[in-house]
Structure formats: structure tokens, C-alpha cells
Amino acid sequence: MPLPLPKSPKDIEEIHRRRLPLAVEQAKKAPFFKDRLAGIDISKLDDPSEWAKIPILEKEDLRALSAETFMTDFNLAPRGEIMEYWRSGGATGKPLFYPRTFEDMKYMFLAFRRGIACAGVRKRDSVHISFPLGMHPVGHLYARVCQQAGIGVNWAGSGASTPSAVQVQLIYDLKPTVWMGMSSYGLHLANHAESMGIDLANSSVEKVICSAEPLSKAKREKLERSWGAEVYDLFGMTEACLMGGEDAAHDGFRIWTDMFYVEVLDPETWEPVGFGKTGTFVVTPLWSNNATPFIRWNSGDIVSHYPGGAGNGPFSVFPIVKHAHRTSGFFKVRGININHSEFEDFLFGYEQVQDFKAEIVTVRDLDRLRVSLEYKRDSDESRLSTQIETAIKQTFEVSPEIVVLERGTLAAEFETAVKAPRFQDNRD
Image 1 (cartoon, rainbow, N blue to C red):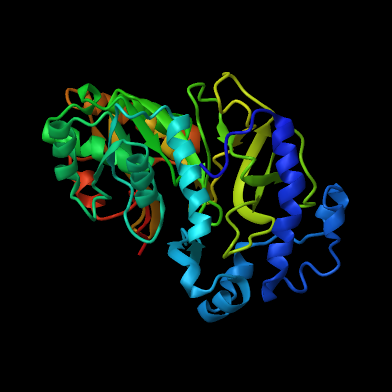
Image 2: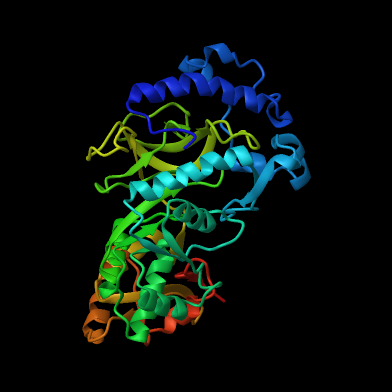
């Protein structure tokens, strides 16, 4: 491995002392940073006030560049050194494509290897991977590092690659011990299994490993019930790599701070916030910056951080980061804001709710919240619908229209989507 696990926080501090000046020197080679880093004294970067002079790098700073300008002004690697390109998420704007050199990839593989090790995946396991496979790296990176570690893999991909009904049957027939995929797709597969009469909670899967989207407490609990498995969440971003993961304590992400210098900052002042307080997550890669020298990258994540956590395993040397699960997604229905994340947590808190879809529709020139529900077998659908209708009105101050669907309806509707479109604005 190119970088062994540090033995103490002092080891990590020493890496920061050595690698931060090198990271800034590397960035200065890119025309994009000529003005941004002018006047920065590299010999004084251990002084927080000097480091704070470096401007925060925002997504829009890069999206303003053309593809050609990005490759000439931000990218440092000649074509012959580029091993592959990674597609950014692009969920809130134009996607970007980041070159990764052969040297970068040594550390990218290491970061993903740490993630599966932190989650306790071992050689005795076999893994069914349902992450999308393509230029977004998450799916193929997990598959490749599992195989590097001697762990067998079924490269299923998302439902667009292998239909969900086929994936459920493969899990039933091939009996993997670990399932990996986006949490929303894990719930989608559970719904498909329900409609097929297959009980995933009694399958061979012992661990569910999620990444690439926030995992709330309610969604985690529903995954655990649906799969009968222990759920682990991993955290990363295309601009850096897989940056951390949960260990058996499940008390937050252990962040590989020997590979990434991370800051949690007040989004208004860009001053550091204290332990336990929420702020914006800002990252500087220390080793994987041979092509794209990200310096003080604003990931957009709202997190809190802690010096340590429960557990005493090999990854306990790393600090803890907890995602605040804030989202800008919301409906406004007749003047009332309904936060998507809060509404999803609310409905998934009902154990008998198999899946749902929430829509804003126009009925006789008025906006209306329509909630379509699928229930588990043998549920008292009438009683539950009345109970949920009343609870939505009390909790969100909106009277909903409840529609009960046959099991499997939403699974079929969501099949071609990477992430299930449970929230839809269908106003006229």
C-alpha cells in the first residue's frame, strides 16, 4: 500500500506539515490558480491565518470554465499520464469530468480499500454491487478494490444495467453476503423482492453498504428491516475520493485525514467551527492531486466533526464527521413548505409502508399534495391510510390525498431511474 495507516494523531499532523505546502505548490502550476494563490507564503502554511488567505474553491468556479479551458487551465496532467476520467455527480448543475493519473489512482484504490475494510468486508465475503457502472467512479471502484482484496464480486450495476427483478433473483440464487448500492436503490430492490414474493430479510446478505447519497436514520432503519442486515454508510466525493466510512460503532464517518486535509467552516465567515457544531465541509487532497489540484474545495456538505468516537479498531485514529442530512429539496403547497428529507423520514417511520410517491398536482385550480402508498402484505390498509392522512395534516399542516397502490407499482415506475423519483411536481 502506498500509505500505511497512521498510528497516532501526531503522525497525521506530521503528514499535514509536509504535504500541505506540496499541495499548494502543485496548485500554483495551474493557470487557474495564478491569481488565487498569489501572495500565499508556502513556508507559513502551518499558521492558520496564512492558510485562511487561500480562497474557498466553489463548484460554480469550475462550472464557469469550458471543457477545453478546464483541461488547459485546471488540469496539470499530460494525456499520457491520465489513467481514466471521473464524472462528477452533476446533481445541481453541469457535470464535470476529472482526469485521474496512474499515480493518483494508487491512492484512489487505497481510499476505497480502506472503506470496505472499515465496514468489515473480508475475503470470506461475496459482494453484489448495484451501484451504477460508468464514468461516475463509485461502482467500478468498489468492484475493483474488492477483487484486489480477494473478494468475489457480481458486477450487476443499477437497474439500467441489470433489471431489478433479475438482480433480486441473482441475490436469491448466488447468495452474496454483502450488497452495495445507493440507499434509495436498496429500498427499490426490497420493493421488487416483495412484489416477487421473495423475503430479502431472510436472504444471505449480512451487510448492506451504501454511499453516494445521504442516509437518514429512518432510511437506515427501513433498509435494516427490509434486508435483515447491518447497514454501513461510506462518504466521499468525486473531487477527492472515498474519504471515510463507518466502522462497527456506526457513530459517524472515520475520515482519512492523512489523505485529505479537511475543515469544517462557518458558511458565512469561513471561520472554523468547534467540535460538535455544524458547518460547511471543505477538503484539500494531499496525495491525489497530480491532475486536478483541488485546494480548499467546498463540497457543499453540512457536517459536524468530533476528535474521536467509540471503538478502538485500526481506524479509530481518525476523527469523526457526521452528515447533517440537510437538503434544499422541498415542496411549497398552498404556502406551506414540505422538506423532502423530513417527509421521507416521516413515511419510512411507518414499518408497514413499503414505498411511496409524493406529488403536487392541480385539482380544480388548487395545488394538492397527493401521496401514493404501497403497504406490506397483510396490512390494514384502510386504518393505516386514515392514520397517515391525519398525521401528515398534524405534522406538515397540509391535508393530503391518499392513494393506495398495488404492491410493485412504484417498483416498476422507478425502474429506469438511478435514484427513485419519490417527489414529483406535476402541477398543470
